[in-house]
Image 1: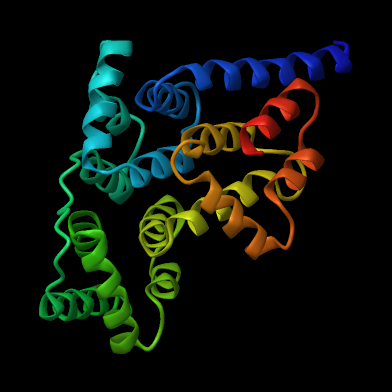
Image 2: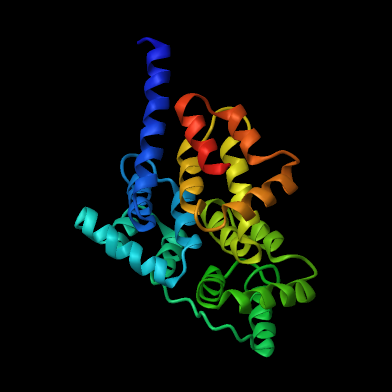
Length: 255
């Protein structure tokens, strides 16, 4: 097989997908991304987590509805069929789209939640993953920010460190993503963009997904966070990591 022809076809496939995604609504292209993440051999857990963690209740409801329209299939059933164990339970919980969205924070409840997380993790032998699931998926963002501050005071370390100690694999990825997204959304997506381009090769799926999705939401803030974190602009990373029409279209969106 001619390598240059194969290379060109791969690049043009990325350019085509990027172009098509820009014409779709967010629920449409995220439905396609989730279908891509679960079909075939191997599951793209990072894509599943990123999408489900990145949407609010309304976004989850719209996603499930549009997915059903496109594929005549139930998103929850399809995802459940491709995941296992505690990670499956986490994705089911996220797909309910039932997070409390109140703006008020009950500091006493935040202290209690922080203590429950402490006792479910580093303060016992073994980990009660269901407690992490119930608190991190159901509580409001504002409430959880207070919980994370209380957790640090109780445990003497950030909750991210405890999650890394107590969890592994996709479950660790899932809980860490929730915490990072809640603490600072632009920083979370900046780190994911960096991950998609660092080292050898590029995770084109992730790069395309984040750029298209966040382009009309918070890409300006993500670009600022990216430059602060890595001392180099997102555009410069894209210039070095991609090529051809695909690169030009990415840069047109980012700049």
